[in-house]
Structures are given as C-alpha cells and as structure tokens.
Image (cartoon, rainbow, N blue to C red; front, side):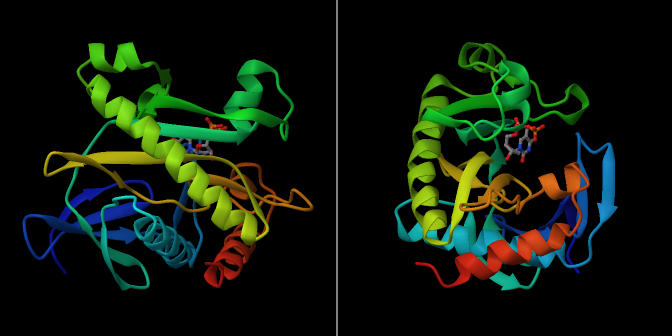
Length: 234
Ligand code: TYD
C-alpha cells in the first residue's frame, strides 16, 4: 500500500504513481454534524465511489474539468493532485437543512432561482457561511477564483438537474469543492448522497445522508436506489 498523505472523515488520500496525482479511497465511515455523529456503514464507500464516478464522467463529457483521471477499483479513484481551496460551494434548488432553519422557509419549498453560497471548510468552527469579501480578505481565494467557482457551480447545477430528473430524482441541494491544478481551478472531492440532498421526484422520499443525520433507517437502501437509477441514464 502506498503512503497515506491525508485521512479525512470519509476518505483517505494515498500517494499516487507520480507527483501530479493521488489515489482517493472512499471509506465506509458515515459522519454528520461536523463529525460528532459517526458510524460504519459497510458498503457505503463503494456506493459513493460508483455514484460519484458516474457523475464525474458525465460532467467531463459535458465540458467540466474535474480531478478524476480514472476509476481504479470499487473504492478508489486516481485523481489529479490539487491544492484544495478551503471553502465549500453550496447550491440549492429547494429549501432544506440550514437554509430552512436560518431563513424560516419550510423544507421542500421550491426556490425561484438556484442559490449559491460559500462556507468555510472548518469542522471545528461548524463550517460557517462566509461571503466573497471575507474569503478574499482572509486570502483563501481570489475574487476571480470565486467567480469561476460560482459560475461552474451553476453550470454543474444545470447538468446535474438534467441527469437526475431523467433518473426521477430531485436535486434539492449539494456541496462542491474545488482545487488549484496547473494554474486552473477544477472540481475535486465527490458528488454523492453524502454531499447532496436527493429526493424521489414523486414521493419526496429522502435518498441521501439525511437518512443517517435524521435516523430514518435504511441509509444504504437510499444510496443503492440512487445508483440503480443513475446507472443507465445518459
Ligand atoms: P446545509 O443545508 O447547509 O447543511 P446541513 O446539512 O447541516 O443542513 O447543506 C447543504 C447541502 O450541502 C447538503 O446537501 C449537505 C451538503 N453539505 C456537505 O456535504 N458538507 C458540508 O460540510 C456542508 C456544510 C454541506
């Protein structure tokens, strides 16, 4: 096994075959509430890896540069070695979670336009929302990088909504991460039921990590459902 460069809550990053790449391994650990709730869900890593792989390949085919080089095995991908930008880009199509709590909007309310926001990637601080001038003031990213990330996030939103609608899934909201690579900003991390809210388009049944956060049971049943539906949609 190669050297571990970094171990996070749900992934391990191993040294890659060269300086420009690393191996990203999806763990079975499920965490929520900035790591305060934690459980092993056997098979989650494989499911997220496959779901994210399908989505990243689809995004690549549609002109979005991502870190994915190739899928190596059930739980691992070879990815470009990026310098992660320490903010998360959150896009919402339907009110849920922190948006509903903060602004008093019932969960499930369709938004008149997609919203974008950044939050600081810092569990100890609870990933607080942060605005563009605060991010540039702290030297975390430049205004140009932030504009590009927002623009890409919205492009990705259109592509994902298209794909998921065909699979009978409502894309409620999700989180993206970006990194610097050879002078460009590219999509990294994962897009999976861990980082998105996916609802059944007809019944609004939750098929994502809210099953774990809210103790709804059959967490992996939701993830398997998502995989089964997006597998054959193109
Ligand atoms: P949000 O509603 O802000 O937070 P919470 O899950 O605490 O209610 O989350 C919006 C979307 O972004 C949701 O699909 C979960 C995802 N997300 C992450 O995957 N990781 C994060 O650290 C944050 C803040 C959000």
